[in-house]
Structure formats: structure tokens, C-alpha cells
Image (cartoon, rainbow, N blue to C red; front, top):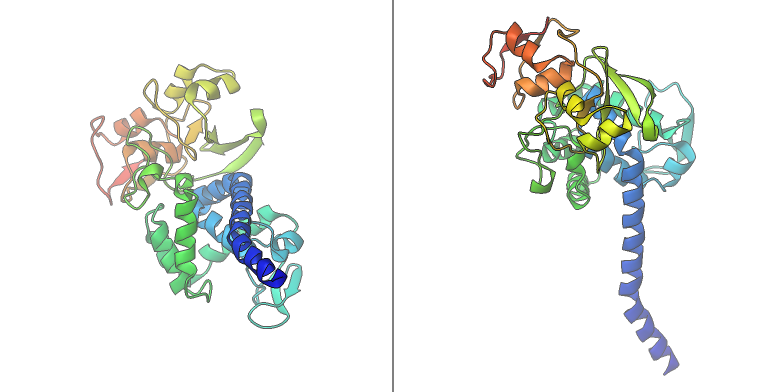
Length: 316
């Protein structure tokens, strides 16, 4: 009788155990996102890999940062040594015994190497023709290109992105592939592709990273930011911040948005820009760190007029 009772308790308690484990994992994932989202956004700005994809891969490959490969080797993406790797290594069983994985001094190095890994291999090149927030296309493309052998890898990436709303960190002005909660309104444009030159200049208030594009300092907006709070943080006026970013008074701010903290230049570092699908005059001006009115004036385009993909715009 006691055995039957004990068995019944186990059966009844199993769902509660699973629920508790799921809650614990969700908490680990949320901490992982909070810790690494800024790095994923910065990598996206430079290499044009969606932050949602980077974060989802990191979560899956590192078990939200708690796998032995992540904790002992700072390897968050399961990248193996391959013949070109000259760095330190970490040996562990995977598909076969004693496989060689890359080992890094810091997790940030793993994120940068992940960007190198995807951008420097021909099999991943078609992915960079996709819209920046087409996470489903990226997920399916990574699976087709052989990033992982798991037949459900793309489904797992998509499920992770949608469950934790990771698409909100993708820099996209408008994306029909993003969930409604992650879309950005036309009144709140953000940088849609990599800056011509990105470097970390200093640590700002609240330990924010201040970056530079075309010689102009900017930051990446975080959750809860608005123009007034940012202006106070950097000792300026909200209207001045609006002017720096060619925005109307009261414009909203979304996570991942590029916010210049000083006036943009009258001309770009590059000579011209070829318009890509989904870009506007505003996002192009933000991308190159130049004043929107000067972009219109240089190209003899009426203010507010749309530009078509393929058009070549002068930047200087």
C-alpha cells in the first residue's frame, strides 16, 4: 500500500517538477538576454546578423549560458575548431567522442567569432540578402546551410525568438515578418544596417557604451528609454536630442534604436549609398550619420519624397 501511495505521489508531483524546471530555465533565458542583448545588437550593426538570431542561437547552443562549453570555454555558439582555428581549444564529446571546440577568454569574443564565422563562409552568403528582421528566413537558412544537424534546429530558433520576443532587438524600420509587438512604427525609424565605421569611444552614464559613426557619437536605446530621460542622462535638452536625430517633438524610442547624442555631419564618410529595399531617406541619414536635410538637398529630392530601391544617393 505504501509503495502504491509513493508511486501516486511521484506521478502527481512530476508535472509540478517540470513546471518548476521550466520556470527556472525561463529565468535563466531572461537573464541571458539582459546580459548579452547589447552585444548582439552591436554585432548586428557591424555585420548585419539579426540580433534575434544571435541571441536565439546563443540560448540554444549554450543552454542559456549554463552549458559546460559556455561556462568553461566561453563558447556560446557551439563553434568547433575547424582547420583555420589557431586559438586555444576545448575537448568534449558531441556527435563523436573528444571533439575539438574553440575556447575564448571572454564571452564577447565568442559573439564576435560567431559574426566572423557567418560572414566569412560562402554557404551563409544568401542569408545577408534577407531583410534584417526576417528571422524565419535566417533560421531556415542556417539549417539548410548546415549550421546544426538537428532536424528541428530552425523550428527551435523560431520558437525561441517568438517566445521571448527577440525580434524587438532587430534594427528594422518596418518588417512584415516581425510579430506585431515587435514592429516599429514609421514615425520611429531606426538604423537598418551596419554603420560605415563603428567604434567604442567611452563608457557613458549608467555604463552605456558610446559609439561613433562618421565622427558623431551615438548610443543604442534600451528598454524604458525616452528622449527626455536620455537628454537628462547626457546633460542636454530633449528638444536638442530630437534635433540631433531629425525627429519630431515627442517621438517615441524603441530598444535598439540609434540615438545620436551630438549633431550629425553635413556629409558622409562614404561618397554614395545605394538604396536597399525597406530603407528610407531617414534611415539612410541615420546609418551614415548625416543630417537628413542635407541628404535631401545633395540629391535634389523634395523633403518627404520616397526613394526607390537601387537608386544611388550622393553622401558628400
